[in-house]
Image 1 (cartoon, rainbow, N blue to C red):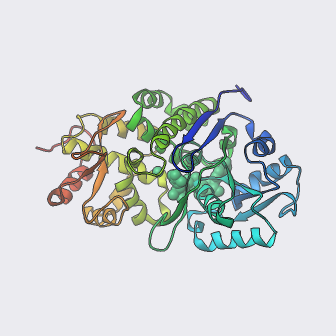
Image 2: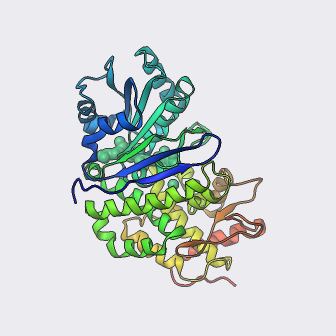
Image 3: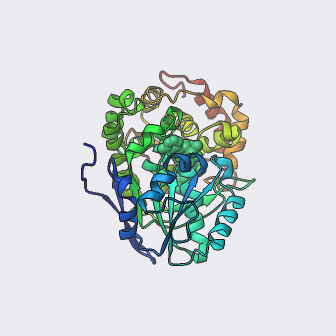
Length: 388
Ligand SMILES: NC(=O)c1ccc[n+]([C@@H]2O[C@H](COP(=O)([O-])OP(=O)(O)OC[C@H]3O[C@@H](n4cnc5c(N)ncnc54)[C@H](O)[C@@H]3O)[C@@H](O)[C@H]2O)c1
Ligand SMILES: [Zn+2]
């Protein structure tokens, strides 16, 4: 299957600044980086932005692909790096990278190549969105989470001291180039974190994908690149279909937030000790249980979710480290909370989200029952929910 030609996923973004880009998912395609960038985003110069870990692994091959075996090159392509870690997705790194580009004389005829995980995609994407009011961007995701989720859809942004992703812009890439071979170097706990978003994609939109993951969890976790390639294709197709219908997150796109109301709360409470996928895995388990307790979700999905997440090595119960009150308080700080009411995307069954009263998919959790329901969800470790 190596190097096999497959048809790319095409993402069409409607609206005032309508655009269309390809997502190319192929083993070995990283070798064609320069040619594909030149075709999709013709530019005088390319700035490859990568974090320190990815730069040390793939920076040189990327520069060599452009025929530029030097760092910070004055023409052709240059490598610009920042320290790895979510805590560097900041305005300080954004300003430093932007200043470096300016010092190198990088102009509007340049393009930015975001080479890395979701942190790089968001940070380099925000540099591309803002530098000279916007320059061309190519996303080259290297973590599983970035390959199957964050590189698609055009969201870019930064964290602030107050909140994650508080600053941001929509800036669609000209191309997303995914080489699943690059996952060979990704640490297993990071691979598992990415699997959480694929479980989410199946849970909200594709029961067959969910069932396929149940059959192949061990192979996926063991880094079978054929299986990972198929997983990325199927997950990308789901995300692309959703963002095409709702590019600016006015409606349908909120279904992608399944597991994220509680997930973001746990992430905020756990700081940088908790990976996004780990937090979302816990959020999905708890929100599926909440759906059952509220009678929105038929019984069963919460146990099935728990089983698949465990098979994907996503069995850490982050919520056990906090009280229900702490989780609720943190959830109220979440962006999906209007006023003090907590809203969650709830499943009707595996593969389908339930429509909320009054439309949309974010269900209002009755404020007078929030604590009681969350405590019940936290207590239930499996079996059927015990709610009347
Ligand atoms: N824009 C969006 O739509 C969107 C969606 C979901 C998540 N996100 C964001 O994505 C971020 C999380 O992304 P992430 O989990 O990829 O984190 P990350 O970018 O920090 O990558 C995780 C770690 O893996 C390393 N790494 C990446 N690729 C590697 C490879 N091939 N080999 C070895 N090491 C590699 C990185 O250096 C880093 O240390 C969060 O900031 C989150 O807010 C954005
Ligand atoms: Zn997510």
